[in-house]
Image (tube, rainbow, N blue to C red; front, side, top):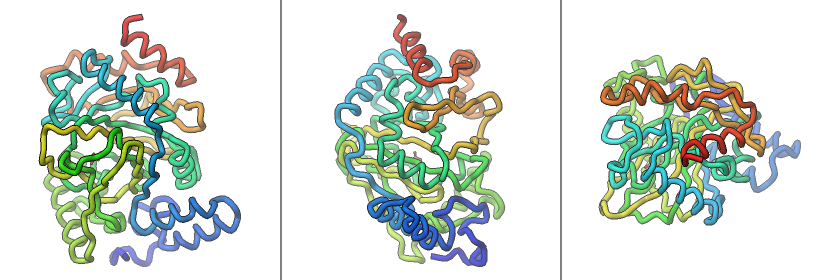
Length: 341
Ligand SMILES: O=C(O)CCC(=O)C(=O)O
């Protein structure tokens, strides 16, 4: 699908993007295949990603690893680790067990999970992201959920701004089999090529939710005009779906609030990019053992943190800051501090 305003440009977006975001992405893919950089199977995944804006890797993460993550997640509700926040009822608050049965998105728990690189970057995901970026991938944020989110269909480039805005990708991992009555992840295949800029100029909403809402409404309308339909991800435990920066996605309505829908969302950028939606001037990339990266500090969005918790909010960055060069000792030190060893 062409974006009329920019159809003479190399990229679909005014803001450029990755090689998969070029109008000639299929030619680039053919070249990469001919040169042996991408094999047959991965090429099929890329064909799909280029056309539809998402790709699915079934059973990418083992049950054993997911169960280990879930047991850490359970413990976190009972005894929240330092610096961990949750988006809940339109506020960002320190994680607390009061939110256990609510719709809540728990930020950055991977900081306390020694096997984070395995669950965030299982092999097919690591390979796909490394190829899509032509650089090592960096996870800059994770969100763990017990329940569906009921989030309206949206693009991530509005809130999650990067120095390379269209380089954002995200993964959604099913931590259990999804019951559609629990509010599945939903998305609009093909919507990633429809770009409507906020106030006509920016991908970032910068807190202007009225303008962002208008842009999203226009994208939805353009999707409808082009016959693009919303589909739900009937995922099984261990399945991973990766979406492109501008794919419209959200959480379906929860029909049975007694049900859980445990999932892990990870947001990625290539090494060399940085988030711009809060002050990352003192944040460093830290390598994981499998050639991927994370960031070394949890820094919640200051404008979002509830006024009722200023002391905790202010203490967060320095509690977690470190000069360590390697991620694993760092994670173990955090875990020991959390469990009081
Ligand atoms: O998991 C969901 O229901 C939606 C997640 C989402 O929209 C997001 O992380 O941006």
